[in-house]
Length: 607
Image (tube, rainbow, N blue to C red):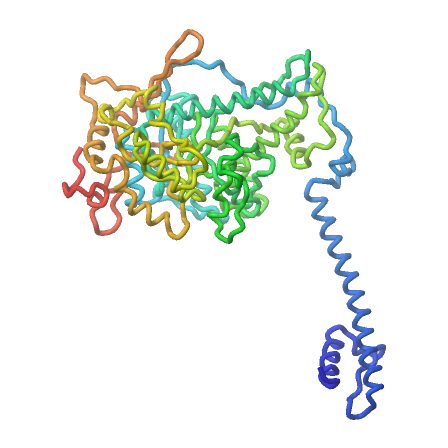
């Protein structure tokens, strides 16, 4: 660089840094003075620039430290409250009395019993579409009760929902629908808090196994979780210690899982995923790279080898009472957001925050078990700062335990995102085909699929139309890493446009497609005057008295055998469930829906 160029550069830099004042010497023109004078001027300016940069750096460091300090305080590691102004890791142990523990707001668990219960299906859907039609018809073909549509023709611009729109409406409308059913809006008394409600996405989910399998897997997943929770509690109890007043949680709600823990706090909700349990699936499930995020840019494929342990809200399934309580908690959070001005845009993250609070509560309760002596317990001083706000609220009467757990096993209706190549259609009794598809998927070691689902043998499908199906000789979508044939498929595999392509092109691969019209017609046929309904599933119940446990279609659903639209109550009208015709659900565009759906050239559906 020439001296002249240097002069102009430093002169400009001097001006930008404020060095052109009388306290600083400017660089003279090289043509009007000697080289030594120029050198001295350049050195002087460089020195001045260095001083100013040093001062700027000190100010920058001071500002950075200030920002970090504010973040440190607001994170909960320290508090501006003088009573709790020590960092979490320096706090003293905290005593909790027996009286405080016994007054905590925890669910009351009834003894297990048999009896009759109902299954209800809910789908959030606001407009007719062939994809909605496919979801509903897959359920009809397998003998499920016809679903209730939530938010039909709904308005999603409520200002308190911010960016959330239909996502938050999905949870609030499910709550309203469950409350209406429990309040008798269907006009019948065959309803109870132990009935099962299933919320499934409406436009990208297909059922492939009957309701008997879904119900049995729901019960089995809950029992597996309850066993884990009982062992956690039992392992913490000291020898000869009296019984801890808070019993192990009992699971009554299942949410489908995701491999990626998204969205996080940026959604306006904080699930606290770092406090969630690890997956109970084998630690080498995907081989040596299990639970390692791949070093690639593709947001979907980078999580391919992660064992699912976070939420995907494509399916939420639980007892009506438990779901109502957990959704009331979610509604409280929505109302808090409306007052605080935070932005909220994900039902998935919102419900995950309810679960996250539950996990923080469980962490706090577990921390008290080892020191329980009958008169009180001690909370360790080094417990996470995330736990403390939940503990304080719990001591003031807030409830955090809702019995929510996850389908770690991919047995219900798992997401296919980040598992795009993990599954495909296969005949389960064709051992060679199973081995070949397992190899294509990249399963390490031997094939993990072992024949047809055992639930089909335990609780035979209630539908007469399904009783002749050879489940091992039909194409069923199977995840080869989990070694399981799920109840349904959630088409959220968005890599390379896979979702749209599969929803259009995989329909004809579903086992029921060649006989779809006949199955739907048989399962939606009204019962004759002298015909008795069959339960969806009847199970021997290992409870007191040996009473069987049976799940049924509700009387209201059995009467109409039609899709219904839930219309919430208003100031002048009660809530109601209005039947809707197939054209109203399925027809969008000029091509008749039944041509796309059935592909048999036989015209409209006649029931």
